[in-house]
Length: 124
Image (cartoon, rainbow, N blue to C red; front, side, top):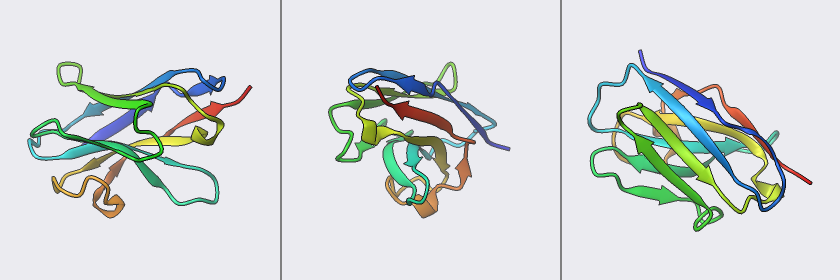
């Protein structure tokens, strides 16, 4: 059974940085996409960034391009999201999620396994 556990959220001032981690266990697939989503209360969950395992290709939401970077450490079985130049509008609960179909990097419906989320608050 695949499990995803996020960590690294917290309170940061505008312009600051945070690195989120997603520890992955129980994953044996070769073809999958793993990514980060975020959701504010009363709003729809939206994709932030995703990574395709088979070739390492990445995708970013326009709102975070140039500021966020997704990466992985396969030895540590961990996915990361480095967030720089944070803005108050980045305040959300951030979720790690797994797409076992292997295509559709932005298709929320294809991400079946979710972590519990970690809160990121950007405020002075």
